[in-house]
Image (cartoon, rainbow, N blue to C red; front, side, top):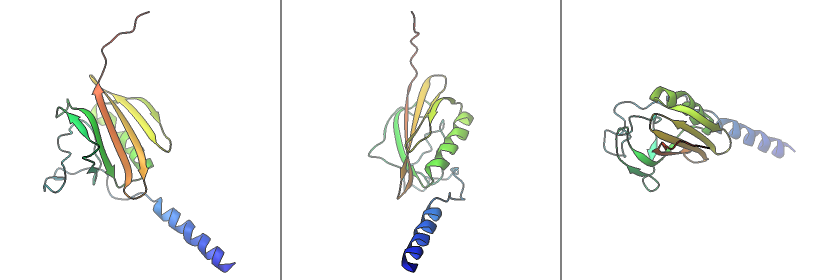
Length: 147
């Protein structure tokens, strides 16, 4: 009985410890990626990228640059899914994006729009690296619906 109780307490403690959010800031500094060891996020000046994010070059496909890029940007961030969800809900408006719709679930999806583009953010938990963030940005359609 003591073994079972000890095992239960151990696993409960481990689960609680793994759910804790890092106290470190999610904000990138001006020098992040400047050492040349990893791909730089400096070219993305119109979206928030959390500190310590690591770009997934195999899954990323981008066209254009600066604040006119389109495509798919994929990276991992060492933060919980809930932490990343809250980060994007608070930071996207600061970059000129307006919320369209959000779904908070096991795989969360957030959609935003600005003057000429639409951004969809998919957040998936990654047990090893934190959260997988997939940004898909495309031009906004100028079509008007008529009846």
